[in-house]
Length: 140
Image 1: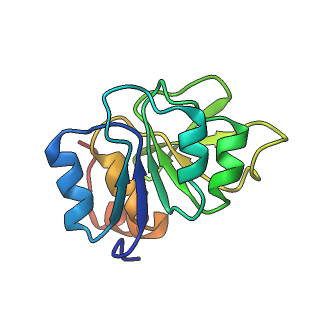
Image 2: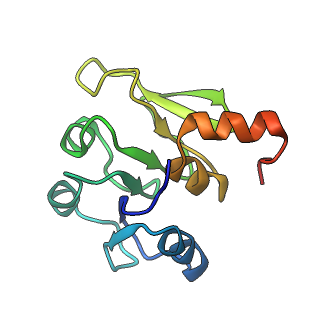
């Protein structure tokens, strides 16, 4: 699965190398261009129709945001928050929202410390399994 054309929203200024990884992968990037936390209303206005959300621990990711983003959005953040169960899958930490009000449990949200989060967010989980099996992908 190619990441070209995937719409990714970034909720804070990120170091240039992280931005470049997404840009070079062909992603369409929108960003909250601030060092301050994004207001919830701003986030609600920007998540519909995205494929990926690169957010920070302090961002207001809750049931309302998840439902506004839709059922197919991948979310990567550096540290888990209450409401998430951490699982190991394909060398990545995968979180599943555990609220009945949220999107169905089978919709996975990436929650990965480090750069492999970007890889997992932009790559089909089956591709990650294939790379792992071939010994071509290792966690940073």
